[in-house]
Image 1 (cartoon, one colour):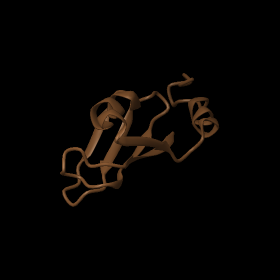
Image 2: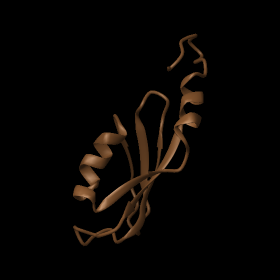
Image 3: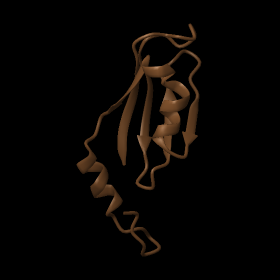
Image 4: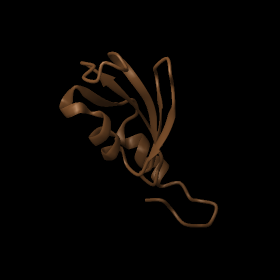
Amino acid sequence: MRRFVLYRNEDVSGVSGVGVRVWGVQWPDGAVAYRWNTPLATTCVADKVEDVVAIHGHNGATMLIWVDSEEVAQRWREVDRPDGRTTG
């Protein structure tokens, strides 16, 4: 697993404000879950982090910042699953 935030430098839509707007996690299989840090918060899922950036990045007005290193994420991908397979 690997945590990330979306940091918004400019509120292009005028809805969510600036600063850390999203907290998220990328699962070992690449899927992500994320929660909006706004007064009307929602929790969302996506197939991959690139989709989240494409939807919410506003052409660079919002940056994805990884909280955890790629090394941490790789260790999670190498963990055995209950069905005997590995995710990496």
